[in-house]
Amino acid sequence: MEITTEQSNQLELLQTLNYDTAAAKVAVAFIKDDAFKHRLFINQFNRTYSETDFVARATKAVQESVEAITVLNETTATATAEK
Image 1: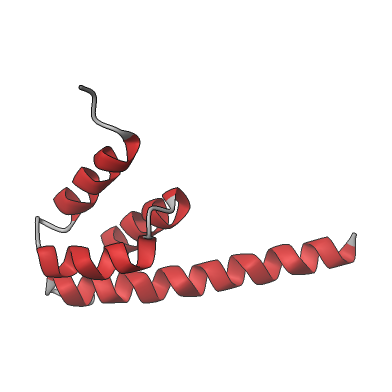
Image 2: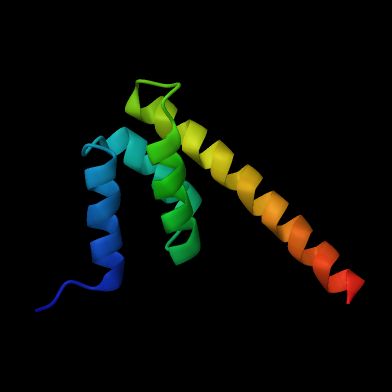
């Protein structure tokens, strides 16, 4: 039996979070099996150095991801309206 993409993403997430299940809970609540949010969260988490605790880093990464999605959605909406 092969590992699914979803399972592979879950393993990557756990590894990124150093197997901290409390941090994983924060991340999973945000990601909800969305591949874009998964990749964005991983990238933001790896950029978050201001926090040392994994749960705090995960929370900060979610915050940064939400802000990025908001900016991207606004930019896309503006570009579409200008066409």
